[in-house]
Structures are given as C-alpha cells and as structure tokens.
Image 1 (cartoon, helix red, strand yellow):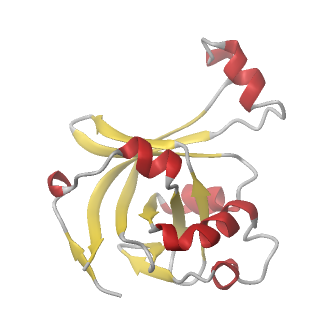
Image 2 (cartoon, rainbow, N blue to C red):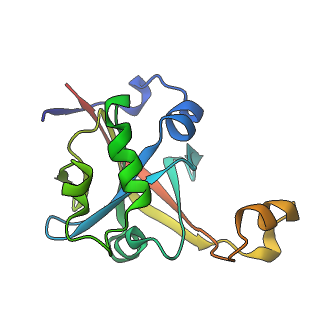
Length: 169
C-alpha cells in the first residue's frame, strides 16, 4: 500500500461514471472502530469556495453513526477487481457481522483522524462542513419521494471539504 498526495486539479475522471457506475465506499471512524458502505449517489463540486464531496446516508446505515461522531469521512474509489467487495459493503451491515472489513476482503487505512480503504486507487479525505436531513416537504418532484422513499427513511446529506486527495502509486 503506497499512496501519494496529489493536487485535486490534477485529477481527470468523470464523476458521473466514477460514482454511479463504478461506485465508491463511504468510510468513517477511527483506527479502533470504523465502518464502510457502498454508495452510488453523491457528488463533487464547489461550495463556499471549497472543493466539496457530498455523501448521502440513510438513517439505518451503521456508517451514519461514525459520520455523525467524527466530522470526517473518506470516499474511496476502487478498481473493477473489487466489485464483489463493493457488493458486500453495500449489502452487509457492520452491525450484523463481527468484522465487515474481513467479510469484504478489505482493510481499513487510517488517515487524518478517519479511515479509508487500503485497496483504493483514489481517496478523498473530507471534513464535514454541512449536514442536513432530507425532508419530504422539500421535494419539488413528488414522485422522487414516492419512488425512492416508500419507507420514509430519508437520507442525511453530508457536504465535506475535500482536504486531501490520495492516489495509489
């Protein structure tokens, strides 16, 4: 495992493909206890003059506890070789297994008071700037509420400043 910090401006990738098609792992926690989960919803952009990565977490997801406690999180992007691990991390809860990392065949990587995924090719280390629960009354297109939230388990939105970008060398 060897990572090199790179300037965010040096990155060339399509965020729509990287997030929605290839997926990412949202990870939070520290060296003692952490959790990771697969996400295919999220975004990157500029807000308040900062590079921002947005992650969305449903209330029942175990990772949410760590996101709320630490104020830091990472987005880890893995190669297609890890598709099975990504599937495990999207379907197995860290609450329900003794060691989700082992179950997925992945390893936690401690960085800047949080955790990322050692097998990643690219890691965004994020410091939470803004958190908000989605509300049903805020949907302008009501069918999105009906389609995606039949159980009314609305995501919490986390907007984090990308404070470090690590690339596998």
